[in-house]
Image (cartoon, rainbow, N blue to C red; front, top):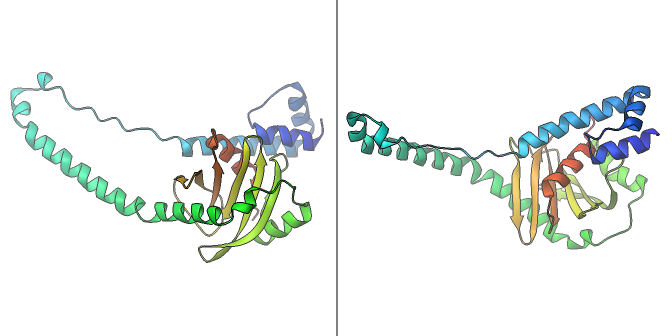
Length: 228
């Protein structure tokens, strides 16, 4: 097994393991480190995409003392005030930045529908011309890049790619200027996607009729080398 085949397999599934892969890991420290880095990023993405629903359990009135039962309206009023305060805070935090980012990403993708229709792979030189000015490159094994351009997004020039995945084409925007603290979900105009925090800014992955977008986003994220 050579390095290119190893990285193609590991790029598609970082946790993959068999005898030939294990043998190559022992012979090639660079590829061993490459898989370790992908597995670390994979774990980070899984944790970022996992959203646990909060469970709020109300006390059983039968199990409360009489005094506690009589104070129930006051407890409910206090709980209601906390919920309202938190809700207002969430609206202020998420109601401006995240929906705005979602609209900008979807709007940009929808504005260039022809980018999704191309099936001819971009040459390595042309792809490097789009990515290198940002200090970024794609690791091998992701899929054919059939569209690559430097576009204006939120007043900044960003790489805009279309990658042909086995599940279908996806748009990728590398947003070095846009820092976010948590994933932002996108669903509008027939598009679905996610914006993920990245080592430099964030990365948006958008598709149409994709059944497993989180898995696709994980693969794309792992394939991006952000450079220095």
